[in-house]
Length: 193
Ligand SMILES: Cc1cc2nc3c(=O)[nH]c(=O)nc-3n(C[C@H](O)[C@H](O)[C@H](O)COP(=O)(O)O)c2cc1C
Image 1: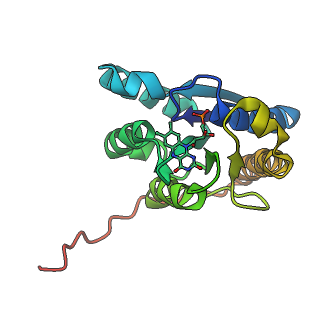
Image 2: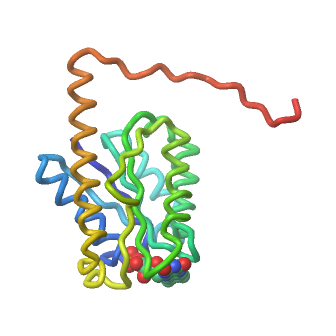
């Protein structure tokens, strides 16, 4: 089993990365593989199409996802929103029904509004949202500061453990014959007709 994590920061080994690796450590303890893909630079330097193609392939193989972003002006980074807008609109069915978690990193404020935005993607695609024992945020401006955020570190570890539990439960259900739901088409109205 494998969890694909996406980091919306341009800083390759910054605060968001540090939080994601903490989730990864907890997953590893449960025998689950993980990978972090950096979205930051490639999404804005002309490589967006290639990045989305690469992610589509990785999404097919992944069993679950973590979408992580620094907070910019109380929102997720423009980079992760750009990628997720494209990825979900062209390949949402490759993520449908797979569990997902969202994570934000901030110096101080805007974490909950950014988490709210990130959670809109999985909740549109029937993805079970995996949670922790607090809202899934860390605080800091450097990896060192994030590691000192004792509560944030604990929340990331519990998130990783909960993700492992959900993945193992889904696999046990599949082995016991529980079938994935059929895709259901809903009416698409615009309030006028
Ligand atoms: C353009 C920009 C906007 C930011 N806006 C906020 C903000 O609204 N609230 C906040 O607490 N921190 C804000 N920050 C700080 C980052 O969210 C914080 O340092 C984060 O942990 C960096 O994560 P990273 O190292 O993964 O990029 C901002 C940083 C930048 C560069």
